[in-house]
Length: 282
Image (cartoon, rainbow, N blue to C red; front, side, top):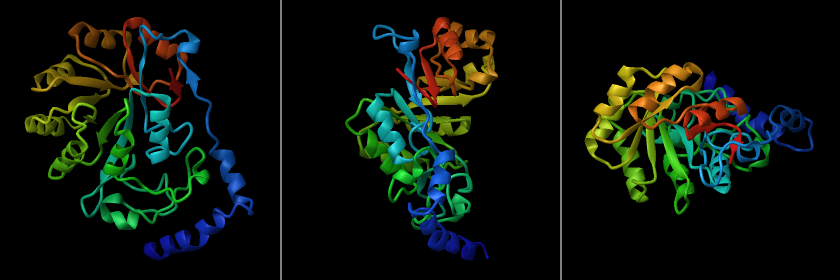
């Protein structure tokens, strides 16, 4: 029944929806308008001599749908330091970009990514995201397609592993190495065992340990890896005291997700120079 419903949506409803002569597209545009990006330097935060190094959270989702190629092309255009993506594993063991393990939030079709092949997912149509209706033939990107955006640029791809998988981690490394991006790419995850697994591969790829609240235990685990490992903490879960723990330990930190000017200024004044954002540019 679900398969039939998905076919009806993709073959009947989506073409109707995307017909610009009908009112549906205008309704959709009201709810998916681009946001105005905000310059930190224009608001007195950072300078050419002492900049903030920004990560585009899921790409520049203020101007294009999150985790899509246009969102990352925007990140390169704006000169972000890094651009973060989320990767999930398909039924046929291909890494694709999507924040959730299912497609419900972003696509017209509803399915678990782990239960679909790449070919099936490539037929799915986006239903939301800034300006989504403007990008023709927008489809879920593979990890390789995402990495290709950054080849030859100064923006670093930042790959967040979402699937609780170990067997296919080597494919991530292979994709990075195939483009000679070992010094450019960053791999991040909440799963410390995955970090250890990759660390033991001795790939030369920079690792970041995603966490909520910074604790001495979190810092100790990051420092225990052979590779230099940064922390990527949740800004909302931390206080000035917990942030100071990381500063005192001398461990690199990039905080997510910072979208308020006063928060960016507070971090900057504390000496933090790396933040992840949906809205800021330098």
